[in-house]
Length: 334
Image 1: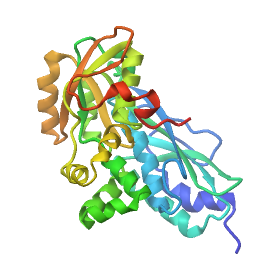
Image 2 (image 1 turned 180 degrees about the vertical axis):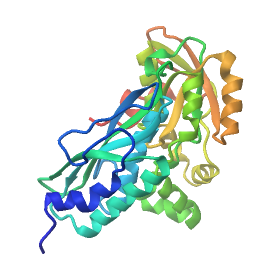
Image 3 (image 1 turned 135 degrees about the horizontal axis):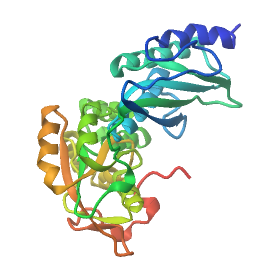
């Protein structure tokens, strides 16, 4: 079988994902030129999706591509930015097929439409072994006058909020690894968790509200506990956990069937919800505006001065932090 050349691959699958009118020129050149929207600054982030780490070998390439897009969108949402373009680098396994590339391009195209994106360029290379690697560099914008909420801007007495629900994706991963759990759940509930693992749902409608109200913010990708610890460490502060994290009705069903999943809820990762801290006098406004865009936010604790001992204090008795090492609080890449 004769495969398309690199130039043919770019022309067939990549070029159709590009569009004009956002300041870039000459798709396929060595560099692209990017203009920020008027009176805005650029925010840029990068995430990489690797087989065996972020997805399973049998996962279809359209969903792998969409997961790569959405993890980046989630990072920009956590900074209150509006995404508009991206670059994509692919490391193709030696057994890649045209059918798989059709799927990958279809996945990127679907999320281009959903999130208002355009492909600017990137790179394609061949892997030395098996497994697709997708690396996305994404561009977003915020008003030039805005203060971008970073991990290091939490303040003592800030209230801690999370968006949406926590743990659904971790349960989906558990189902992939330990299939017997599915015997305890009906097919609809099982399908819900598997989809939550495969296809994150970045909270784009929350983005301008994060920018308006958050002091510190980040997305929850490696697990609620470890990411909250990172936020506190960056701000040189601690946190009191006062309420359990919000979970879906499906997660409640799974926890009743398998109570040991409780740890995975807060340490499993892949939530792609937003973790933010807000001054107490702005909390009601945050909650009201989040309701207006139909995104739930739940207060789970408070930022406190750090005494030099534990970063997180388990006031609600849900997390048994005394028995957890740092590696036991969430996903670790190394």
